[in-house]
Length: 420
Image (cartoon, rainbow, N blue to C red; front, side):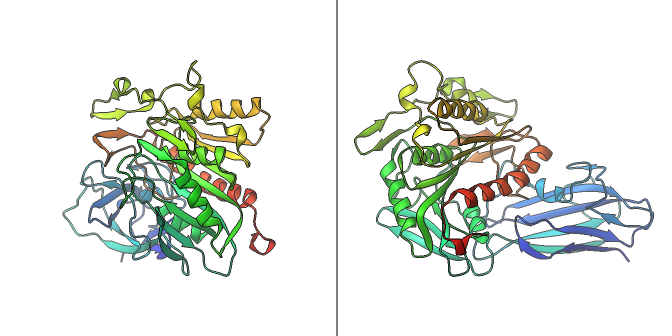
């Protein structure tokens, strides 16, 4: 009898699992398939082919995939390569508290080339992938004009506080915040446009709003109030860098594939107004699949006349970490990070760091997240090309998650009892 098991069957979404099959004839080609339905009912699937060993076993920790969505030894490859049945949908967990993602595994005792096999599998297994650890609390934030969700870890605290920002699609995205809280950070998922009564676009942004968020988080009784971290991706990385440059409560900043100047927005902070540089949309590149490559549309901050829009990173109170996918096709993130680091050093600020990943694209997300090369976004009628290659991108996600946590733990001030 053929068996398929996954261990553990229930775990955080960032934790690896072990997948094994046995009871097969020796040296038989088999197909292992994974599928799930997201919160909207959209289906995602992946598959890989394996050859059983002398004992009729397949162990994804050791057995190389011979083909399918990837090849080689990649224990989490079935998760990395999950792709939508409806083309170009991106998998984003919306309901982080109410339910896990249920991933179904199927074993077929033959080479199964069809995406949706017509025959029944020879063995099945199921696992639950949670985005929040037991005891983590979610508090809806509607404080003054602030909109977001605050995730408080289990325990007495005080905890290191982090503000979490996403990019140009807007709305409230919580999955990274809930996972950071699961690892001990009090994390505020902060919406700043296209959510509830917030502005519909990011054309005009008020840095005072982000300062209010820092004050709100610092004053929470379970948050160590002597300094905060901020993490952002894409447009969120730009705003994280702005916060670091102007708001003194920011003690540590993580910028994931973003710019280092105000782009496409007007940013105000009291009497200070940064008009920003407009996107050069006429420089958009269109791929044969009609996806847009946006990286050429950003104005180069090194050009004369752009100094007024460049964020003064040298004024940041704490260290800054740039995480960069070298195959990012949505932003010239490596060029921007190098420029900002050089500017900081010119002014004597030596704690600006760059971690870059060859083959990684724009959407560097927590470990085990499916690779998204291209997708639709709510603010554009066109497909957006994010870039990257499956294996190096997903390996970068594994590596960078630990780096992010270590950086924040080291640099956000906290009481001794909260140090891990």
